[in-house]
Image (tube, rainbow, N blue to C red):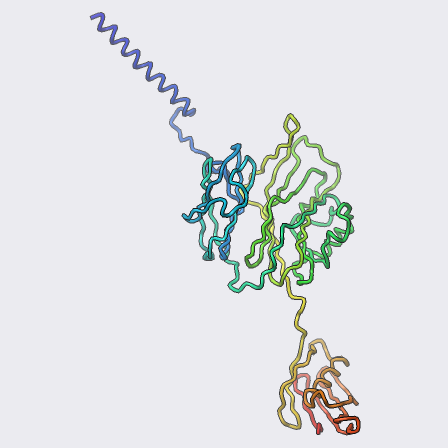
Length: 421
């Protein structure tokens, strides 16, 4: 009996030991220890895989583009992009390697075929670690009749200035139209305030195809140095309107970072060149950072997470410099008989001048009698409502005895000719 009791006690002790070990390891696996759901906070701006899709855009011409950034994890690999269930390799839309490092941003862009304006596009990345997803509504601004597209330029040059534009430009993006490339007008190492004043005077939203177009991005005035901007990526999207898309990094000095004690206005100048007639739009997609230094003096850039992406935009209309000359069409009556209409390159809405009156009179004579007939204008009278003219004409110098008279009603736009034989 005693033996049975001892055996039973040993078995009970062994069972309790096993339960205790299981409970210990279960507690390690779930630190909350109370069965609470340990899923990630759904309000976090970073996906579970620490990848985030930024600047997702789709246009009805089929162009889909976005940037992706890796947070927290040291590195990852992007394998594929799934668009509405269809899979594309990462390499099909990007020249960049699929390997992505912590804090790094990479771009993907591909024409996936015509899309319906207003439709929803779902995008998911197959990647390690985790996945990232996003959605966008197709932009319907693409015109069904796109004008001749200008030649796509190579990567533009960038010029940065921090001091000379202080007090001239507010925070924002601008188009500038000048007669030539602004970077050829002065040495790049020394651009005085007068240079930026000239740029300020040429800010526009309308230009001609003979103007040299540049883009200015300005952060506005700051009381100290340490505030910077830098282009991370640039793309030219052949939609309508044509889009210049930049990703620009803004960096602010963190606590304890030494800065210059002078007013600054971080300014970026991007010369583009002459553009074909049409509509253009620039988009500046902004990613902001705080700069600090670690114990070893190495720079540390901490992204500033925002609920909504910050995007600056501006539009430009380029028109042809060969604008048609204003003209006026008159009905012509010769000796009471209707004659063919006459169009003269004059604008009557601004009033009649001696030059315009002579042009109408001489054009009428040639229209009726032909270019081979000799003529001389003897008399011309006019007001803003009517004019009269009298010519002497002949087939040669010996025949200069014929009379040609006209009266023009500038309100009814009719010219009456008499005595032309």
